[in-house]
Length: 276
Image (tube, rainbow, N blue to C red):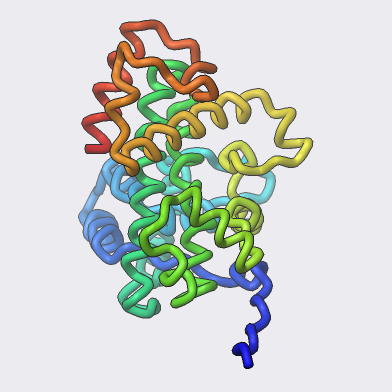
């Protein structure tokens, strides 16, 4: 007799998780905020390396009691300033790390996805600096949040995620998660970010009609997709095929950016340094 197949857990259960922070990142941020007269931009640079800390910061800064009647924040620096020193310290003190709350076998997979988000964020910022400098901050943050659904999948599926994810590409993994577990990391990530009060322009995977009409968000979305393309190529050991002078794939999002020769050379040099 074939073993009984267990029912698939509803993917929406993943929305109840709190994404744990990276211990090293949290220690660095806590050390900075404890310094007398610490610089906001110094703390912001440390916070922006961990999407979990950024999520909690924006959630607190844009919450009803602090943000009533104010525009939602798009800047880490502004969010730190809105909270102030005391609330900022309390926020960091109350955060949980992977060491506090995560089964050891899941930690490497959380960090793989967290690092992927960081790479997409940094490459997105490189592209924005050349293509649309006013969008650099938003492109970075939107790229950073690309990993949220994947991290939730790790927390939600646990050992099953590890078994499925081992030895396959990211694209193949996304397909398997949907087919085997009805877990769409893009859709779950979008829902999670909305629930955490993240501004809509930073949620580039949102395919709703309202989001699609936002022209600035559409620009940022192209930058993120181009950044993901670079990161995917690096993961597959094919970044060299994107070197200046090579023919880009016909469906490449980099073609949409219509970069000039010297612009692309500058971008590729920075991307290569970031990803290798």
